[in-house]
Length: 79
Image (cartoon, rainbow, N blue to C red; front, side, top):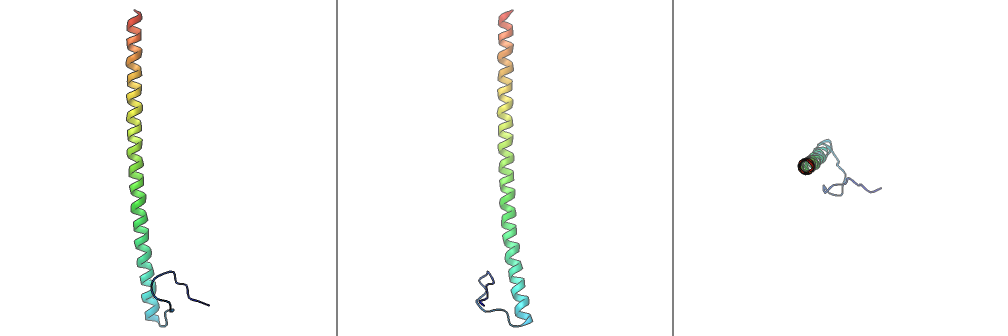
């Protein structure tokens, strides 16, 4: 049965406790780096979505303000 450790740590399995400890520490460091990268990407996407929502909110508010002004002008013209 072949060893499939999923990393670039070589093709042979750790033979001693020290090698196993080093292997596990290396894997944990790699995982921590990947999780940090994913976390940063998620936060960036959430920030981008927040900005887009703010922009949409501003556009809706502007449209609502314009509609209100148009109704005021229509009502003033009817008098």
